[in-house]
Every structure is written in C-alpha cells, then in structure tokens.
Length: 302
Ligand code: 13P
Ligand code: SF4
Image 1 (cartoon, protein in one colour):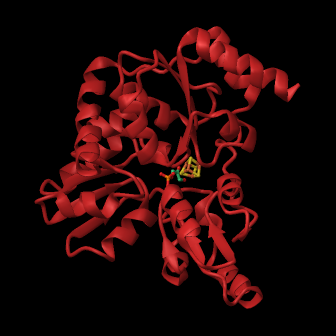
Image 2 (image 1 turned 90 degrees about the horizontal axis):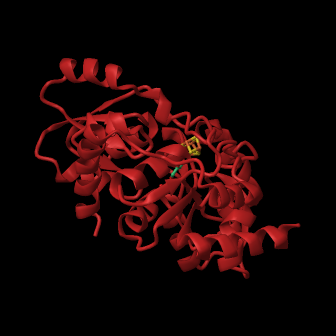
C-alpha cells in the first residue's frame, strides 16, 4: 500500500512538474518522499527559488502561504487543508493595529508563524534561526515582537533593545516544564539538552543549546555526545536518527507532538498532486506587502 502510494507520488510529481517540500516535524513517510526537508527559513529559501511549476507543501498553512507569497507564479498546494498553526492564529491584524497605536515608535517583527495579513502589517519577518540578527538589524530601539512571547523573551535576553511581547505561544512547546529537564538530567547527566526557542524561558535557560529545528540537527551531527536530549516536536527524530546512526536521542517530554504537523499523510500528498488541491493563494494587495517583510528577512539571512 505504502509503496504503491510512493510510486504514484513519484509518477504524478513528474507529470505535474512538482517539488515536495516538507517540514522537519512531518511524519516519517512524508519526510522520506520529500525533495527537501528543513526548518521554516530553509523552506522559505527553497520556495523562493524553485523551478518546478507546482510546490506541494507538507507542513502547516502559514508555511504554504509564505511559499505562495514568495512565488506567486507557482501553484502552491497544502495537501491537508486543516493543517494550521494555533500560535499563528493568536495574532490578528486588528489586534496588531491596536497594539501598534500603543507603541508608535516600535518596529514590528513578526515570527514567520503568522498569517499573510499579519506579515503585511509588520516591518520585517523572522524565523527561530535568525530572530536575533533580524532584531539587531533594525534601527528602532523598541521592537514589538509577535506572536511568540517565548521566542520574543529569548531574544530580549540577548539584545539591548526593548522588546514588547505579544501574548501568544506554541501550545506544543509550552508543555515542557523545567522539572522535565531535572528528571532527564538525573537519568542522563552527561547528555546535552537541546531545545527550540518556542519553549518556556525557564526551559530555554536550563538547556545546553537553543536553536531552530535545522540548527538542532546541525548541533546534533557536530556534537561528540553519544546521547542527546531533544526538546522540540518529535518528528525531528526521523532525521536525527537517520543522520546520526551512532547516537541515541531521547525526547524531553512525550507531549512534544504537534497534531497539526501530523495531519498530512502520503495519501493526502498523492491526492494533492492528482487533484491539484488545496491551492493556497494570497490576495495580491496583502501578498505584495507581506513579500516585502519576507524579502527583507531573506536578504539578511543569506
Ligand atoms: P523551525 O523554523 O525551527 O523549523 O520551527 C517551526 C515551527 O513551527 C516550530 O514549532
Ligand atoms: Fe505551530 Fe507549535 Fe505546531 Fe510549530 S509545533 S506548527 S509553532 S503549533
């Protein structure tokens, strides 16, 4: 069954001149058939430069939306239409406009986990791998950072700028508590603990390394440690195990599972290619303004 689907996907991919992009949290089978697997920054960079006519985006909606913003001439497909990011929904354009009135001197930095409309209302976009560089590149002393207060707090600890936080966060990463690190440290005292900056401040504080999903993969492959504790969504274990067969990885907490990232199956990918569904488009006026914020980020991340 799986191999039939894989063959079908390969055939349709050629017929439609399509590329499959997948996030590091996708289910193993989907990562296995992807042409490129990466973090939000890597996926945006890929999406901006693809030559194929069709981009099948295996991730959540804001990621496919970013691809549609960056490559409007391509057909961008989100195979499972319900795959959203709850954190991205925690900031609305109306809410952001009201906050901007409160802080007229602040530059707005929006985490890529946000809607196209919120990106259009912001000055520049960032991902977890470049957030500090982006914030430091801005002339303003005051930054309004939306929507992730955990990532915003992490950045605020490393800059002299005043960072105004938004009350949003990732429900998956926020599940990890500081006592989970204490327990794992007791069981594996030698093992480094590496976490995503979407985790709570006290978790980030107690970790040995903090980075985006691709930065976590890089750290793990370069580390001499035989056992490594991972504090991000467990889909990342697929690449960690494949790329580091001599190392052992433990997930920091069993709650580190994002149900939205798990919605996309091989069947959805095959159906997406066959029926050209579900097409993601962005209204042109919003797209043009949102693209400016993404372009500025990509320019600073070369
Ligand atoms: P990365 O950009 O680190 O892959 O993170 C995306 C994301 O949604 C994390 O929850
Ligand atoms: Fe959104 Fe968190 Fe899922 Fe990432 S892991 S897609 S931030 S809910």
